[in-house]
Length: 276
Ligand code: GDP
Ligand code: K
Image (spheres, helix red, strand yellow):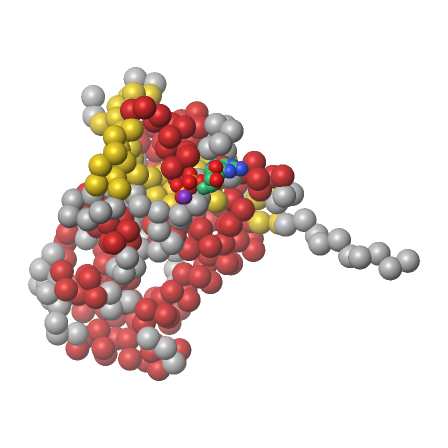
């Protein structure tokens, strides 16, 4: 029987460790990621007669190429291509957590969201439109509480359902605004005309967005020192926004994350102080 590889990704303090411990317990193996002092936790699980390999990625806020944790997480996702990603999201910090979610969706790998710390969100009176998140992102969303061990069965059911139909669980392609998408088209066009090394090796949308960001790590790996075509395609965008590409792309992702949060999260009204 095929082993389903599931990468677990999330922000620091999303409860990822607690969740993985609750799921895997003593079957967890702890080591290090190759070449770095970042802890690697893995577990082989049997669930409903299926074999699942869980790989815990370092907690990160982003998939930029700056911290060791970010590099480990993104290299794993891009190079190893797990069957799916469980994205652990802190339901009490939806907007910030969705910034990473947006980046995970760029990879074109099916995502199941564990909407964790859901108990606390409920205690705070937050109303979260779970189905709304599912519809807008094209991912399955399961409310969980890692500390109370609730929602874990449902999470695994969703993981297996996605594993059985990976193609049917591809996330929605999020668009980043007209001018960015137009420039992306231009870059994509240029790429098609060039026989670049490693072009076929990366997820295409992810690669395109990383090139747009002028991501140093990707440019280096692709041995792209001649960036004239990127410069041309991005010149207007940079001028119009008065910013560098990295900030422009980060803003686009933040505005997606905050727009989504506005749609799906209702916090209780702050009570007006009664003056009578
Ligand atoms: P990590 O950094 O993502 O691995 O987060 P941890 O697993 O260390 O959890 C961070 C904090 O959140 C700890 O104090 C946990 O006890 C708490 N926590 C984790 N999951 C939940 C949850 O589902 N509900 C509540 N209320 N607290 C949680
Ligand atoms: K922690």
